[in-house]
Length: 133
Image (cartoon, rainbow, N blue to C red; front, side):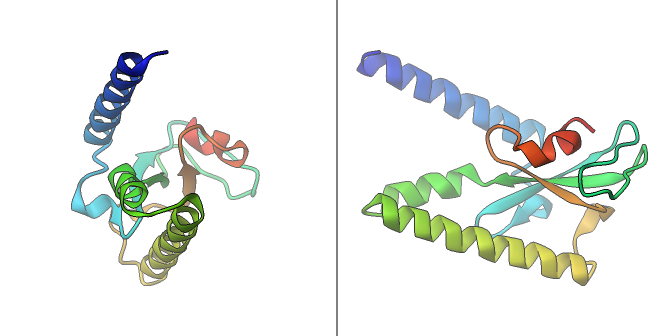
């Protein structure tokens, strides 16, 4: 694939990401878990028992954790090498997860989600049951 092909693919992926974020309301202030994550709250369509055993009944709310892609792109643009990029993303992801845990402990997170699953690109093996809930 030539340069024009890659530019077209890049443009298409950026447009899809923007539309996905808009439809899932991932850019809303309530979804943000700075510095690197955002949360989409969903309702379980039918009862599920994920691998960890905590039962989700129909109508229960759960949160899907997404990477904040614009932030990740900014990190890639601003950092000099792959090791620095990896370490910075790891630090920011841990900071975001710590903040989310503190918000849940203090019951500060709105929308009353009972549990959270990760969604980064493709659905990881352990979260398939949540993504299809």
